[in-house]
Length: 210
Image (cartoon, rainbow, N blue to C red; front, side, top):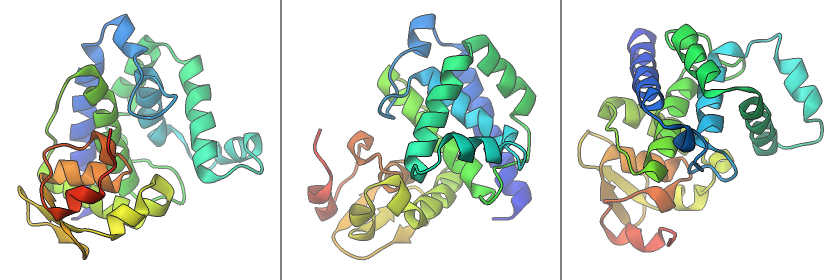
């Protein structure tokens, strides 16, 4: 997928997430997301912080998290950011940066797509809401998450099944078959197997329960 198309999909999903956020009640902003310890507001602030982090911001992030691993750094930074932003400020950030084509240095342009797609689901599913993103976008994000599965969690599962999407031409991996919509396979690849639904095949026996 070329970069023009990629960024169009990122901007589309950010707009969809902004629409979700605009509809939330004050209680829903503080509702727990799928990310342990993160509220809906924390997740939203994290997603739209991506285009705001450049080389100038990296030293401060690293300095605040010396000796900590990648996941610990992200968790602490998200909680720090969420604690300082109001819902109104998060929505203002979406209005300002949703169409940006900047991304965190040393990452690829696919990471903002992963953030927008997966974190939108992290917000929606605990609230009992749904949104079906572009299937091709989800397939691109799933490939990136497969590559990063050692960081995202569940890499043994991701690498141990034969994934077959039912709504787009996307087949990956070897092992017992795990079949379903590419969005649900993306959730598995992103370490959210417990929140995935509608999957079939022998590979479902390897999915975590609960």
